[in-house]
Length: 208
Image (cartoon, rainbow, N blue to C red; front, side, top):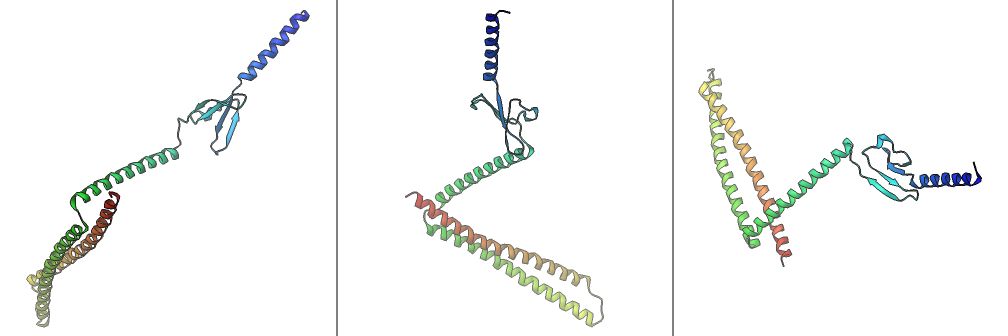
């Protein structure tokens, strides 16, 4: 081989090495422990999990976004979407309530009047229940008195009286439950109208 040929071969080899070095790609990714890794070979286990390709100067020339999610990430995404939907629904419901509030009342006085009417209705319901309770209590006392007389006389308890006592006890239990519900309804009325009045004032203030 001539000296000229040898020189050309050396130059060609150096050029190929330089080109190969210049075109070499470095991969960067985050492993399962959260640590950043670099390599000139992309591990197959990282496929679909996202990585970046860097040139020899460390500049990003290509980036592959994650296409595979872990079960935990999928669940977190599902919860985030569900929360966003719930917040959106909550805002929509609040907007509807605000619109209804402004279209129903024109002043705080009207809110107070509506509250008083609702409370009066519940008061009438409780009065009716109290009348029924007094009647059932009287019926129970009468049945117990007759049963006591039968025991004192050594006579067997009448089936009719026993049924009368059972019906009175059952009615008293039902009425008592209804009274508790009506009492709770009164508490809710106070709370609801208090919240309505507060929100009404907030909306009116924001419109000024």
